[in-house]
Length: 366
Length: 247
Image (cartoon, rainbow over all chains, first blue to last red; front, side):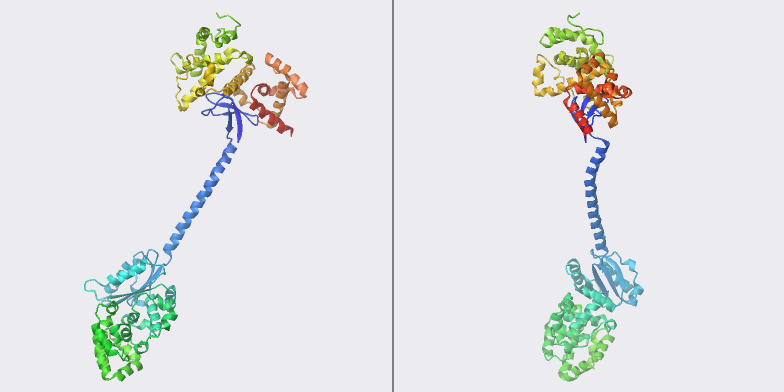
């Protein structure tokens, strides 16, 4: 920056003798006095000064831009990333991919019936509850009038609380509508491997959880045969576990699988038998159980408010049937036991062919 | 007609330096007389500066009167500037300051500052609230002296600024010539007296081109006047340039 001494001040300009011995005219600034040494700002100095001011400003602006852009990009990535997978198994079955806001980002039909009915765009952007409702209504409108069971299953991160809470609330409130016959079964897992395995097996996450649960209980359901099973049968597997959270089945596999189930062998392979071993009242239905009669009494005493029992439709009829079955077993215990153990497929088939267990028990009686 | 050595003022009314000195020493009646006799001349300066026909009731006229009074206080024969020239520059500077203040509108001129009353000029200088400093007065007087000497050569700062050498080599040449003139007191005094630059003498001494010296005569005169003045800061600037050129 150049300096100079003010030699003359006019109303239009001031004349300054500069340090490099030049005589220059400058605008008469306020406070200029004759003989005063002043600093002169040349265009070069201005550019230099501007660069001094601008450089940090540009750097700060660039840094801020980078931060804002980073935040926006990461948010957009997070918003489009699949946060949780939620499947609705009614057969036809669907699987929703949810983002962090628990909105439906994508929908996949898991079988032919579903792909026939599914219009993906109708579900995108909806909350998962709205999407489930819409799907159920869609099914009802397309001839699936008598939906008895709906399995809503989700795989979400371990830290998630929002979806878990919503699932719990959904379980409590869903199907309470007037005249609603539907039973909503809600399960979830924090193990991301479940969704990957399900994808490999071509199953919904809910089905995969049932297969996992069945495997843990030495049950009959595998990835191959589970597709052919009715939902009523499958959810009975869950009833044995009785918990919504299925994470333990896969994450702590050694513990869960290692725990011997005293009723597991006898309960196989029928779905109704599995139900029976999963709850107090159903224990009595196990033919091989020596304490079956006692359990039957317990069944009678057990209040029907048991949530696990009510969520599984087979149990509602089960108490009656099991009483009769017990009587049968008492008379011919070895026969019935043999029947069930030797012909697992028959009993399963029987139950499959008849939507409710009541018919099945009749056949058993015969 | 006032007694003493007479010097002409622009309107032809003579004022002697001795009368000014007497007024400065405390002769208030004489001061009044000097001011009264110079009123037409002061009004003329104000009219010229403020582009007014009637200046009797204007602020500029009041300021000019105050500046003229200050010029009486500050005048020194030792500076070899005639009082009218000195007073006219003081009045002009004051009016320029006033117009600058008025145009910026940042501060209203306080007429209490002009209420000189019986306070002597020395007391007002010592008063820190007066806004007058010895250093300012010294440098302003030096500037006035430079301006006066330039005016004798028919030069003004504005013209000089427009035609001042831009190239370093030309500037260095002018500085060398000016230094030679300023160092030779006899030659300098002669130049100031005759109001002519001794071009041939300088050319002979420095073995330089007469044409070149004549072409840059105004710059050489200006630099020589600065080098002979009390403006130490400007002299130091020139010395630094010479030192840099010699290295």
